[in-house]
Image 1 (cartoon, rainbow, N blue to C red):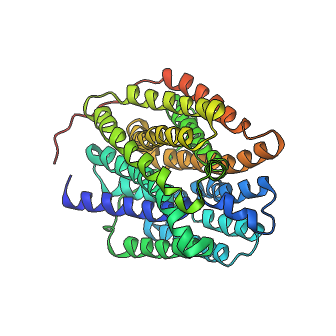
Image 2 (tube, rainbow, N blue to C red; image 1 turned 120 degrees about the horizontal axis):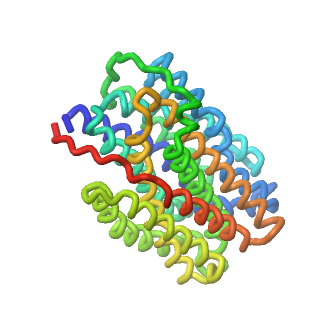
Image 3 (cartoon, rainbow, N blue to C red; image 1 turned 30 degrees about the vertical axis):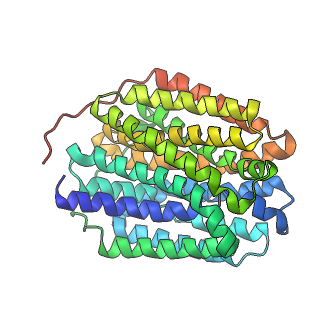
Length: 389
């Protein structure tokens, strides 16, 4: 890649990372913290607050992507980050779960994922675009893992309000990066994508279902995991003792897996193996999800699968999306991701309240089975063998 492309890839991945870190930081701690707030005795409401930002993300990803085609990528990204800051401030000042829910909805209104990935496509040549998309996807997995380690430690020092103020500061840093670090996008004409063509593409729709299922499982797990560790005798401030080893071990496995997927043209094999691993994690949570050691082992396996899939799915999307409909394809992909994030928290809380905790991994396991069946029928992504510039 050229220096400008490397700068674009690193800076856009940093924008994703700063924003997603702010969203993920509450996952390991909010369910336990909310128990001491008005409204916190309603598990369904707590789950809704965890996943609420995904609801507004789902409604606004495609409009934000279309707006970036008309008004430019950077202005739309900055506007979305400002909305995210407003939502973070509302949540930081909240004294009950209902107000936190409002703040999370406003956070999600800054639905910039499609605009950022479209800007990445603008700033990179076709033969290097997969690398940049993989960088962005890997950054999401990295900050998710980092948030699992950092959140309990930060919560013990600055509390829940402090975490939301921190998310506002991180978003301000992302605005600075957009304005002063990301290269200017070339004034190229952008073709309008066709929804029918994207929605009728079986490969893309399988990947869209996958990102939906992955993020639904991700958020639904965090309705259960923090409380499970507390019940196992581990105080919230010490949850990092489980998360840190799990994260480090997961990256030891994830990095060579992603390298093999890209270098050995084994994307489909690695992809399917990660889905199988997700299925095993859900089965483990159902059969042996109580106790610190079982949870620690299952979390490690989950992080491996999640990080591999977060790195490979955007790469696969960038290879199979029609060139003239990439923006539309990315908008639909990010919309399904956001729906999964919302439903994971909402359904997870509802299932715990009305059915019982064991229903959450049953839901995740069912989704993993369907995903594996769909993925088995996918063609491997095309391999571009273009010399590096």
